[in-house]
Image 1: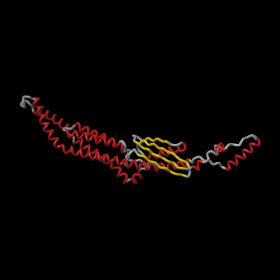
Image 2: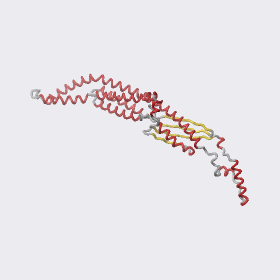
Image 3: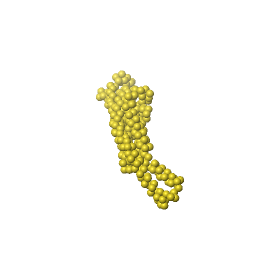
Image 4: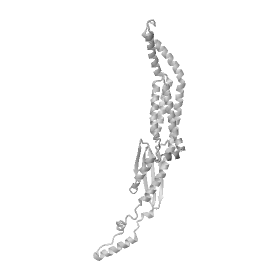
Length: 320
């Protein structure tokens, strides 16, 4: 599926003691780059969050922000009455020996060893809430990535259609180009033979004349034969449409793919990297077409092709 690397997802999960809020912010990157901003009390979430994201995302710089709030009633520390009674008995026993011992203050009781953790956050409960929020935020992030990716794919399809039209126009020009070049070749051959043999053809041997004609014909063929470049451009455009159309196929066969790929990663690899390589090859063919251009129409066509390729390359830089 074609996905953009630029997206945002957020979610919140509630539990009895409070709530956990989580945000994913994703931008372009050549690789998967995760940055965590977690409170100390929820630092234990980093490992499961990293595992979740690495199995679902292929590329992008992702910032993970986690925060939590605790309900007001749970913020008030509670002292265990049974513990207080036991502490009072111990204090009374100590005063029988040391009568000057002062009673502990309330703040000291709250922070007393064994009592201070009674109101601590339960890592398991808060961790489960954090992962619930993470899964919801990731679904939102992936949906946003998919929608943005389809919009980028549509832009590239429009550019590809423009390229197909340019290639078709050049193919229609080929017969006229060949006729024009034949005329130019005939003139050039006549001028070449006359300059080499100003006395005419009387003293020209058949083998020598054939060799000169063969050389000029070879140069002519190498210069104007752009059919190979046009064929490769059409092949690259077909591959481009295949990659861009893979998103529809992926949605249709999502359940099947999920069964075949237990890790959740896409088996087809990074569409963005495949597109980048494809545009490099397209650009190479457009450059060759421009270097072989025999008239201004082909030169202009090569420039227009390069412009469309660059536009698609800029869009592909945002694709995962």
